[in-house]
Amino acid sequence: MLAFLACVSSACTPVKVLNSLVPETSYTLLSAKVYGTSNREKLDIYLPKTSSKENAAQSTNALKKVVIFYYGGNWDSGERADYKFVGEALSAQGFIVVIPDYRVYPQVLFPEFMADPASAAKWVKDNISQYGGDANRVFLAGHSAGAHIAVMLALNAEYLAKQNLAPNDFAGVIGLAGPYDFLPLKSDRLKTIFGAETEQWKSQPINFVNGKNPPLLLAVGKKDGTVWPRNTYNLSKKIKENNGLVEVSEYANYGHIDMVAKLAKPLRGDGELLKAMTVFINSH
Image 1: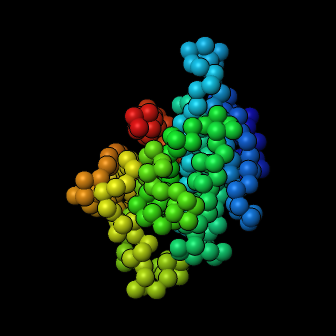
Image 2 (image 1 turned 90 degrees about the vertical axis):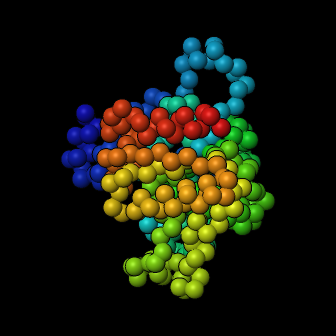
């Protein structure tokens, strides 16, 4: 409560108020690890803390599953520090969580903005064992624009190939309220970000389905008026038609922001979104 009052009195943003209420007892934060050359190419690592009872039940050499979380922000904004609540939620389940920043518009356009997420994934594969993570059990996840990025990495192999990786080098992918089939573009800003109309098809994950993707969990809020639920349903349908691996998790009363904010402990309720993600990760 004191943290909340201090944050309010200093005119904090809503996410900072939210993060001020998130417990810090379940993780150790390693901040600003560098994975590239620009100032935006840094990442935070949330290492789960385990109790003495848990340590006694597990081998001290057991490597943990890893989740790379790409935040949303319309491909033009976002800060890794704003997603402490995601790091806490997933690290409390025993996973190592990595949240990278990546370059966004206007610094980069599509497809250039796919390069940093792929590079961050490569850094994790190469380095996470130093922090107790299992490089063979790394999951990609994201919300909104971040879900677009995570799912695009899973479906269009060209971005990971530039890092000498392939989609099936990852154990699974989670998309929360993602835009996967969102043409035609309406706003001038999006038209600038995604380029000439004749080339915009390349920005749609649905156009790269071949049935060879790693397992996908697509979570959708049925009251989402920002990214229409049809994005999830259309992509799932096409993956199933191609005999690919996909699950859909629906939330009848969730809007767009709920599809990530409900991971935060103060807003979690019965934790149905976090439970679905945890079950998916633990089953692959």
